[in-house]
Length: 218
Image 1 (tube, rainbow, N blue to C red):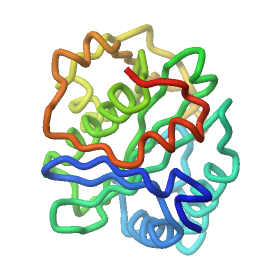
Image 2 (image 1 turned 180 degrees about the vertical axis):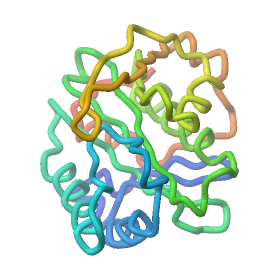
Image 3 (image 1 turned 180 degrees about the horizontal axis):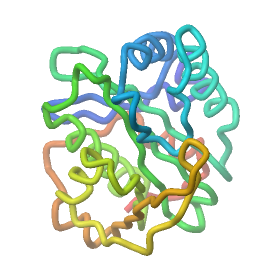
Protein backbone atom coordinates (compact mmCIF):
# COMPACT_ATOMS: atom_id res chain seq x y z
CA UNK A 1 0.00 0.00 0.00
CA UNK A 2 1.25 3.47 -0.87
CA UNK A 3 0.91 6.80 0.87
CA UNK A 4 -1.57 7.88 -1.83
CA UNK A 5 -4.09 5.49 -0.25
CA UNK A 6 -2.87 5.57 3.36
CA UNK A 7 -1.05 8.91 3.85
CA UNK A 8 0.52 7.84 7.13
CA UNK A 9 3.02 5.76 5.14
CA UNK A 10 4.56 8.99 3.88
CA UNK A 11 5.19 10.40 7.36
CA UNK A 12 8.80 11.02 8.40
CA UNK A 13 10.42 12.89 11.29
CA UNK A 14 14.18 13.30 11.04
CA UNK A 15 16.83 14.62 13.42
CA UNK A 16 20.61 14.42 13.06
CA UNK A 17 20.53 11.18 15.09
CA UNK A 18 17.26 9.38 14.35
CA UNK A 19 14.53 9.01 11.75
CA UNK A 20 10.97 8.15 12.73
CA UNK A 21 8.75 6.65 10.01
CA UNK A 22 5.22 5.29 10.14
CA UNK A 23 5.40 1.53 10.57
CA UNK A 24 5.10 -0.56 7.41
CA UNK A 25 4.63 -4.34 7.39
CA UNK A 26 8.37 -4.71 6.85
CA UNK A 27 9.06 -2.54 9.88
CA UNK A 28 6.50 -4.52 11.88
CA UNK A 29 8.22 -7.85 11.28
CA UNK A 30 11.63 -6.42 12.14
CA UNK A 31 10.27 -4.66 15.23
CA UNK A 32 8.71 -7.92 16.40
CA UNK A 33 12.08 -9.66 16.17
CA UNK A 34 13.88 -6.75 17.85
CA UNK A 35 11.43 -6.79 20.76
CA UNK A 36 11.83 -10.54 21.14
CA UNK A 37 15.60 -10.06 21.52
CA UNK A 38 14.87 -8.09 24.69
CA UNK A 39 13.69 -4.66 25.79
CA UNK A 40 13.97 -4.82 29.57
CA UNK A 41 15.11 -6.93 32.49
CA UNK A 42 12.48 -9.70 32.83
CA UNK A 43 12.45 -9.05 36.58
CA UNK A 44 10.60 -5.78 36.00
CA UNK A 45 7.83 -4.52 33.70
CA UNK A 46 8.06 -1.02 32.20
CA UNK A 47 4.80 -1.27 30.24
CA UNK A 48 1.23 -0.81 31.40
CA UNK A 49 0.32 -3.89 29.35
CA UNK A 50 2.73 -6.80 30.02
CA UNK A 51 2.97 -7.80 26.35
CA UNK A 52 6.59 -8.90 26.70
CA UNK A 53 5.77 -11.51 29.39
CA UNK A 54 5.57 -14.33 26.85
CA UNK A 55 8.18 -16.32 24.97
CA UNK A 56 8.79 -16.22 21.22
CA UNK A 57 7.05 -16.65 18.86
CA UNK A 58 4.04 -15.43 20.87
CA UNK A 59 5.87 -12.22 21.73
CA UNK A 60 6.44 -11.44 18.07
CA UNK A 61 2.76 -12.17 17.44
CA UNK A 62 1.78 -9.78 20.25
CA UNK A 63 3.84 -7.05 18.61
CA UNK A 64 2.28 -7.63 15.21
CA UNK A 65 -1.24 -7.77 16.64
CA UNK A 66 -0.72 -4.42 18.35
CA UNK A 67 0.74 -2.70 15.29
CA UNK A 68 -1.90 -4.08 12.94
CA UNK A 69 -4.72 -3.25 15.37
CA UNK A 70 -3.54 0.35 15.71
CA UNK A 71 -3.46 0.74 11.95
CA UNK A 72 -6.86 -0.85 11.42
CA UNK A 73 -8.53 1.22 14.15
CA UNK A 74 -7.16 4.59 12.99
CA UNK A 75 -9.94 7.15 12.61
CA UNK A 76 -10.24 10.90 12.99
CA UNK A 77 -11.71 10.27 16.47
CA UNK A 78 -8.97 8.01 17.81
CA UNK A 79 -5.52 7.13 16.53
CA UNK A 80 -2.12 5.75 17.43
CA UNK A 81 0.77 6.76 15.20
CA UNK A 82 3.36 4.02 15.51
CA UNK A 83 6.73 5.23 14.26
CA UNK A 84 9.66 2.92 13.60
CA UNK A 85 12.91 4.49 14.82
CA UNK A 86 16.18 4.15 12.92
CA UNK A 87 19.50 5.55 14.09
CA UNK A 88 21.94 7.55 11.98
CA UNK A 89 23.39 4.35 10.53
CA UNK A 90 19.99 3.12 9.37
CA UNK A 91 19.62 0.48 12.07
CA UNK A 92 16.13 -0.17 13.41
CA UNK A 93 16.39 0.55 17.14
CA UNK A 94 12.86 0.82 18.50
CA UNK A 95 9.34 2.21 18.34
CA UNK A 96 7.81 5.57 19.28
CA UNK A 97 4.05 6.13 19.45
CA UNK A 98 1.73 9.12 19.58
CA UNK A 99 -1.75 8.25 20.90
CA UNK A 100 -4.74 10.58 20.80
CA UNK A 101 -8.49 10.53 21.24
CA UNK A 102 -10.71 13.38 20.03
CA UNK A 103 -7.56 15.26 19.05
CA UNK A 104 -9.40 17.83 16.94
CA UNK A 105 -11.02 19.05 20.16
CA UNK A 106 -8.42 18.37 22.85
CA UNK A 107 -5.22 18.90 20.81
CA UNK A 108 -3.63 16.51 23.30
CA UNK A 109 -1.67 13.32 22.64
CA UNK A 110 0.45 10.96 24.71
CA UNK A 111 3.88 9.59 23.85
CA UNK A 112 5.22 6.12 24.50
CA UNK A 113 8.30 4.31 23.27
CA UNK A 114 10.73 1.45 23.62
CA UNK A 115 14.26 0.71 22.49
CA UNK A 116 15.80 -2.67 21.85
CA UNK A 117 18.02 -3.46 24.80
CA UNK A 118 21.20 -3.48 22.75
CA UNK A 119 20.49 0.08 21.60
CA UNK A 120 19.88 1.56 25.03
CA UNK A 121 22.27 3.87 26.85
CA UNK A 122 23.10 5.94 23.76
CA UNK A 123 20.77 8.89 24.37
CA UNK A 124 18.37 7.75 21.67
CA UNK A 125 15.38 7.76 24.03
CA UNK A 126 15.58 11.52 24.51
CA UNK A 127 16.23 12.10 20.81
CA UNK A 128 13.19 10.16 19.68
CA UNK A 129 11.01 11.80 22.36
CA UNK A 130 12.05 15.23 21.06
CA UNK A 131 11.26 14.10 17.51
CA UNK A 132 7.80 12.92 18.57
CA UNK A 133 7.14 16.17 20.42
CA UNK A 134 8.15 18.16 17.34
CA UNK A 135 5.70 16.17 15.26
CA UNK A 136 2.94 16.74 17.79
CA UNK A 137 3.45 20.46 18.32
CA UNK A 138 4.99 21.74 15.09
CA UNK A 139 3.43 19.23 12.72
CA UNK A 140 -0.01 18.46 14.10
CA UNK A 141 -0.72 21.68 15.99
CA UNK A 142 -0.93 19.99 19.38
CA UNK A 143 -1.52 21.95 22.56
CA UNK A 144 -0.49 19.38 25.18
CA UNK A 145 1.76 16.33 25.31
CA UNK A 146 1.37 13.76 28.07
CA UNK A 147 3.45 10.80 29.16
CA UNK A 148 3.47 8.23 31.95
CA UNK A 149 6.00 5.87 33.51
CA UNK A 150 6.08 3.51 36.46
CA UNK A 151 7.70 5.08 39.52
CA UNK A 152 10.83 2.91 39.13
CA UNK A 153 11.33 3.24 35.36
CA UNK A 154 14.46 5.33 35.69
CA UNK A 155 15.26 5.43 31.98
CA UNK A 156 11.88 6.83 30.95
CA UNK A 157 11.73 9.17 33.94
CA UNK A 158 15.22 10.41 33.09
CA UNK A 159 14.12 11.41 29.59
CA UNK A 160 10.99 13.07 30.95
CA UNK A 161 12.96 14.90 33.63
CA UNK A 162 15.33 16.33 31.03
CA UNK A 163 12.44 18.11 29.30
CA UNK A 164 10.04 20.79 30.59
CA UNK A 165 7.17 18.60 31.72
CA UNK A 166 4.95 19.35 34.71
CA UNK A 167 4.25 16.39 36.96
CA UNK A 168 0.62 15.75 37.77
CA UNK A 169 -1.05 13.51 40.36
CA UNK A 170 0.18 9.92 40.11
CA UNK A 171 -2.28 7.16 39.30
CA UNK A 172 -2.54 3.63 40.63
CA UNK A 173 -2.75 0.90 37.99
CA UNK A 174 -2.40 -2.85 37.79
CA UNK A 175 1.13 -4.06 37.13
CA UNK A 176 1.47 -7.78 36.61
CA UNK A 177 -1.69 -8.25 38.63
CA UNK A 178 -0.78 -5.96 41.52
CA UNK A 179 -1.48 -2.24 42.13
CA UNK A 180 1.48 0.07 41.58
CA UNK A 181 2.17 3.76 41.06
CA UNK A 182 2.33 5.31 37.62
CA UNK A 183 3.77 8.83 37.46
CA UNK A 184 2.00 11.20 35.11
CA UNK A 185 3.36 14.26 33.26
CA UNK A 186 2.16 16.93 30.85
CA UNK A 187 3.84 19.54 28.66
CA UNK A 188 2.16 22.54 27.07
CA UNK A 189 3.05 24.09 23.73
CA UNK A 190 4.52 27.05 25.61
CA UNK A 191 6.77 24.76 27.67
CA UNK A 192 7.88 22.91 24.54
CA UNK A 193 8.67 26.20 22.79
CA UNK A 194 11.46 26.79 25.30
CA UNK A 195 13.32 23.69 24.02
CA UNK A 196 12.10 23.69 20.41
CA UNK A 197 14.86 22.59 18.05
CA UNK A 198 15.63 23.92 14.59
CA UNK A 199 17.23 20.71 13.31
CA UNK A 200 14.10 18.51 13.13
CA UNK A 201 12.63 17.89 9.69
CA UNK A 202 9.03 16.86 9.02
CA UNK A 203 7.93 15.18 5.78
CA UNK A 204 4.46 14.13 4.67
CA UNK A 205 2.66 15.99 7.46
CA UNK A 206 0.07 17.89 5.41
CA UNK A 207 -1.59 14.74 3.97
CA UNK A 208 -1.53 13.21 7.46
CA UNK A 209 -3.32 16.24 8.93
CA UNK A 210 -6.00 15.95 6.23
CA UNK A 211 -6.31 12.19 6.79
CA UNK A 212 -6.76 12.67 10.55
CA UNK A 213 -9.17 15.58 10.15
CA UNK A 214 -6.80 18.14 11.67
CA UNK A 215 -7.70 21.45 10.06
CA UNK A 216 -4.51 23.39 10.77
CA UNK A 217 -1.19 23.13 12.58
CA UNK A 218 0.49 25.80 14.66
